[in-house]
Image (cartoon, rainbow, N blue to C red; front, side):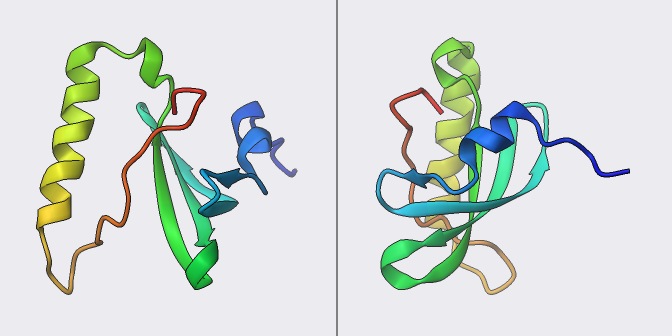
Length: 94
């Protein structure tokens, strides 16, 4: 039996975030948010978009941790690690 998509997935699929990334498919979802396969439009490159859902309602320490993780990851460079290309939030707080 096919699984019904979540409301959050329906809202994201096909949308373009910040004019830069088109959301193509949901990869997985966890306690803090979800990860999507997307296309970086200007470079026609497949990327992953990790979201923290409800940023505007998250406890400050959770937001700080997410930002620290992004800053740390952006400084790391290794062939066996993902690279952080961008870090931002949507007008909806995601």
